[in-house]
Length: 499
Image (cartoon, rainbow, N blue to C red; front, side, top):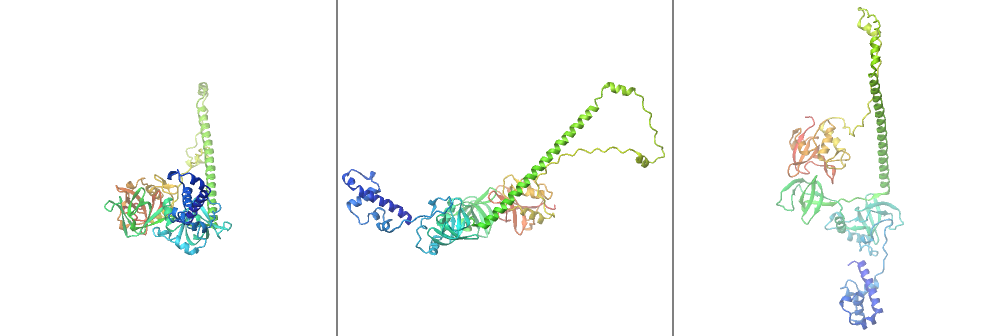
């Protein structure tokens, strides 16, 4: 049992002893009470009255706490990191009572990791949001950075209420109560929803439909490729392959790692804030420009509609002359015709002396706002297409989407990329596999399309970029990313570009 727990129990026992001494005569006079109304104070009182033991505290706690613990254990005050919203109950109880223990030795002891080897010599931040990293072990010391919830750090020393750490570019002190060490860090991550990845550590690994070595093989995955983890049991890990296709692999053949972050220094945070502000300002100016263009377009459209209406009204007025005016016009003598030009005049001379007809400008149509598009790079080779597609790595996956920036699914990503090169493809991976010319998987070239099974047919598509890699809208977890072309077993490849 940790000493802080002893301290709590000791305090209760001391209170019980005091209460018992004060009320010993009451207990002596009333012999009718039984175990149903006997609390800890009464139990201590029995030992005092009967004087049946030299160490009643040890008897009552089965040796967990003794009279010596109560007499010798000093009270300590916990230091809470200033400005943090972390619950103090998350403190590692063994840390706050180590003021007389060598900090390096204690760090080595606390950070042992036999099950979660990722956290050997390391700790993870358990704060609700983030914790300050300071230059010294005091809340008055300068803040040099912050570490977020789920952030990982290397532990140098543990000295009571403070731990000296290294993370990212930061090296300083963090309040020990906001850290979990070694295997405890792994347990905390598992219980608090920290994302986990599985990296294959064998040449080729079978992904099975269920947690059974006799179950159907969903696909094969290669060494070094990593996958999002849904769940982990004693022998099996459930991984996401692509889209909604998942399966089970043996734990012995994957390395499981939690996706932790590193600390951010004050300078790094300032630079990120500056870039974020610049991006926000740029987006705002673009929005204002779009609004101005839209207003101009609306104004031109209104003017055009007015001109069309006026012209129509004039034409209608001219065609509705009174019948009397028409009759008068018919009774008027016909004016003598002008002599026709001499027949010897050439056509060019007639044109030279002819009166030019007035030119009337056609009303300008209101410009329509063009849809957002992304200019493809120069060149029409498969390498050009592959390089263009790789520009969107890191953008989100959205089922049914076709936006290269705001989100696309696998076939939506492919059709939008190919549209930039003049090819029209359907929004369906299986249908896309019927376009172009089928090629061997051993003869892949940049720009070719690779197709993957979903267990019942073709359910995923990616663009081959060369070097044994593909770029694809992988899943809602991973977004648009680069993977090994055989991250899942490809079942078909086609070449469209240049066909």
